[in-house]
Picture 1 (cartoon, rainbow, N blue to C red):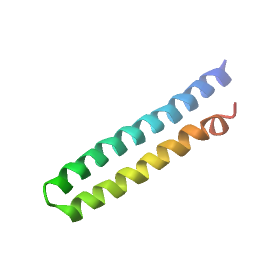
Picture 2 (cartoon, one colour):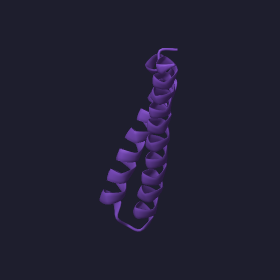
Picture 3 (cartoon, rainbow, N blue to C red):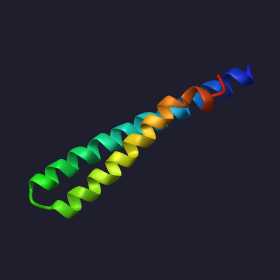
Length: 71
């Protein structure tokens, strides 16, 4: 019983991290595009860089999620 609870908690944690990283990456990339269009290239570029990094993190978590959850 405890094993199933821990497995579900680990699954929920990994899925939550993937969702949070993907959402934050999407929002930051969109903000970077809007800032770059508003002639604030430095701030927009930094937002795009952080958004791209979060998107890569979300991709890697999704790709290796089964290994992290010991399935």
